Image (cartoon, rainbow, N blue to C red; front, side, top):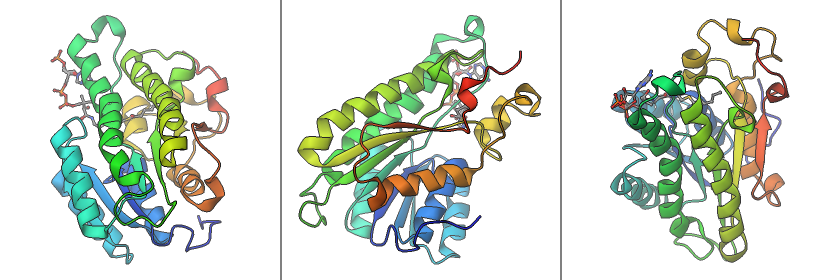
Length: 263
Ligand code: HXC
């Protein structure tokens, strides 16, 4: 589907996208690139990153891949430093990296719970904490008064409760609170906006193929969304259209979270 935004909406911006090699992260990378941004992606699998960079480059998008794990501070710092070394600055951080599986709490080991919180919540904080110095106004490569943006990819399940998802809802609820708090602390002093997008059921994503392999679980829910819907919301936030939006958790789910799936 064609974008409703001007193709120069993100001209000159530099974005680092965690989990940017596949799924929603890659969709955001592609559309950011098509709207003029330079793109860095970080992920754990080299083959996935290589393929992603090849696809971005074939669309004339300047792209850099960094192999790394968002749970590790040294990887976060290296990814941020390499992005700024290559592209001269950082304007946007998208925290898209996540881990998930279906498991009832009674079977969920403490280590399994910790693993998802470490990837999602600690990973988001790790990247945001180290990115702040590059995103804030006055950082290297920034024009006077120019700030930055963090977009956290969260979920809608934590707005209520979800079977098999204690780890996920705990991780995402923490990210939602972190989003508002960093918006509070960094918005005024550093001109960094921090927002979250909460996707509902989105077709053709690793998350939904893990959680709803046959689509039967949610057959009575509102229609599934597309990765495009999430990417367009991200462009809205990253373009000048979103300049007054800070600390928002934006559900992009066709209203799905109001509906209880049948079980
Ligand atoms: C129960 C499980 C499990 C499962 C792993 N564990 N898979 N427990 N059911 N299916 C347990 C392990 O037994 C172990 O605990 C602990 O979790 C850590 O497992 P590791 O395999 O060592 O972890 P790691 O290699 O770091 O892998 C992390 C992962 C993996 C989350 C388990 O699936 C992953 O890397 N996923 C990344 C990609 C992904 O999931 N993308 C989808 C995101 S979907 P013990 O006790 O045995 O040591 C998403 C959408 C959300 O975020 C919105 C939904 C609508």
